[in-house]
Length: 92
Length: 338
Image (cartoon, rainbow over the protein chains, first blue to last red):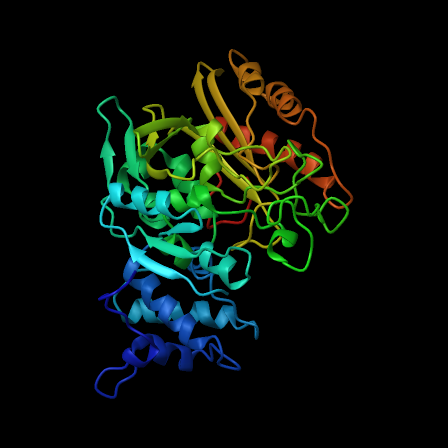
């Protein structure tokens, strides 16, 4: 069904040894505890920034709601996404 | 999960040929419900017919002021389509109230109509369920039925249709264009999904050899006065306990035309033309809203855990009509109900 489609996973985000701004933001904001959900959170957030539909923190929360974090790191995840949006030149 | 064959349909005629040739086959588009059901062993298709490459992914003007939406348009593309946002914001809002962004990206317009109930017992193959195994009984009627239906139920089934998008399509009086061996036919949206009766295994009036080609929206989109209000246990990424789509056309403070549909309460989006007729010609005020709610909920019947839905629906109808009349539609990213 998706034969031939280009897919980026968490392993494909860092470039030339430098972390993707979202990976750095997750570290800066301590946006994870156990780390189990982190690759999904980061990949979804990359998609969210690329789609540019989220303009407010409420909209980030709504559009990230498909990613569940059992440790409850949500406030830090939102803060990390806000930082990465600013770093990537996307206005919040 | 069982082994199955996979085939990619070349065009619509090929898809119809494939589905006609193998009654135990299923179409697959986004797969957001079917794959889950296969993993749970609820659906056991012998053959999957991949329809993702059919040319059904456009949104086009119909020539009489409406839009024709191809069955494969992803839910998120539809919600954010400029013509939908501008002319049918009720539909956009309802879509964005459902599932999560990832699911909306994958899920197709036609698939949204064809998704199956989320009744716990339908998913639990260790329990009786007339929808999954006809004649085995209904576990929900005397079971945990908090999420189940209060309207149009039968002794065989109290499942709900889980879609948000379909509630808006019902209110907008969309048409479903389906293609079969004899060509295309149109089904009024309110006739597409069925009540359970004594055949709850049949969700829709789509025939076994037909495929959904498109959804047609009429010209009237109620873009000025509408609201979609969804009440659920979790603020996002949860199915509706009750949802309401309200659309009004106002003229000098009076209601000229009205549409009202409920989600999460029945086997199909729940409408009653009498409730809408009761709103027409009335001032947009609490008396009119209360009357409409009373009519729409006529015959509502609760079970052990879901009787609360009747009052919840009454209040949600009232609130949604007020939001529509005031031009303050519910914003799906804000959890504050205005």
